[in-house]
Image 1 (cartoon, one colour):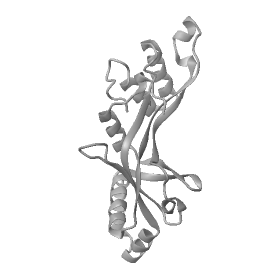
Image 2: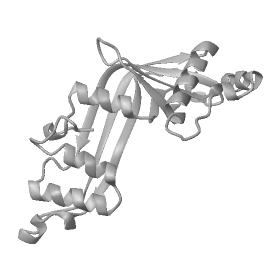
Image 3: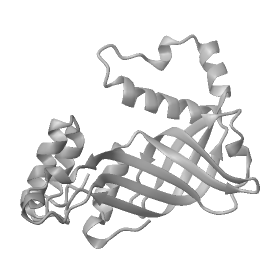
Length: 214
């Protein structure tokens, strides 16, 4: 990934970003070519290195059966938004402005491991369910489903894990713009309903909380 220095994320910010994300695209190079799957994820940190990212795919999805010829890639996305040059006060001064896109993303590389153990899968499903149901007013529990039904559903999925060897992370939040333009971007994003991106732009302002790039 192309990462200019002003948009780079340090390890601490990258770890926080991975821990906050719920989904990713798993991409593998196989004898049949590139194969990709969108899937729910959990980040498993480690004291030494980045750790791993885990998730699951449908058993009928051939990706888990096809040997990966190279390291797998997980593309992890965060908030993103179109940036209009009309939001820049500098447009009225010199007009040398163009549209762009602000975003945060991470490319996670590593060895792909497959998990077909019912206990591993049940633990993953319980953790994913607790994470997402905890955000709802009436949380559903895995134990609300009949045990035979749950066992059948677990047989229909296969676990995947990317043991991370390296991460390329980028947070492009208008850090290369003058302060007045950054203010204009924040106001423009809020007016457009992109509050998450507006907050990220404000947090990434150089010299004012730049460490909070997520």
